[in-house]
Image 1 (cartoon, rainbow, N blue to C red):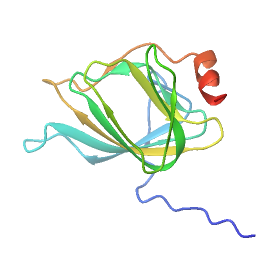
Image 2: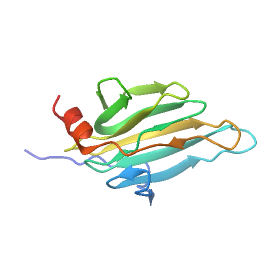
Image 3: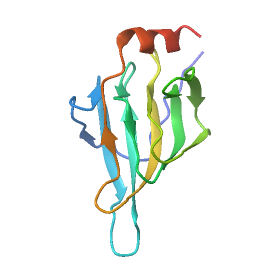
Image 4: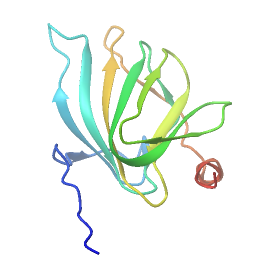
Length: 137
C-alpha cells in the first residue's frame, strides 16, 4: 500500500517563540492587520506535541483546521479533539489553548480580532499533565 503525504497549501513559516508555545510551532502571515481589516489571519503549523500557552483574545478568534489533528481546551472544561474541517469560534476573553496531538501535526488558519493594539494576552504554559490527559481520550 502506498501512503501519500499531503502537501500543505501554505509554507510552514517562521518559528514561533517558546515563550508562548511548547514544542515547535510556525506562523505564515496570510493577512496582516491594516486599515481595511481589524484582524490578522495566519496559518499556524504545530508539529506533534506542540501547543500554545493558555491565553485569551480581547475580541475573540476563529480557528479553521486545514490539516491534521489536535486539541482545543477552555480553562475548566475538558479538552476536545479537533481535526481537518473543524471550525472553532473562541469568545472574547475566554482562557484556552490549542495545539497538535502527541502523534500528529496540525495546521489551522487563525483569524484574530484586535481591540486597540492588542489581539492576544499570553498566560501560563499548559502543563504536561494536562496535555497528556487530553491525549488519553
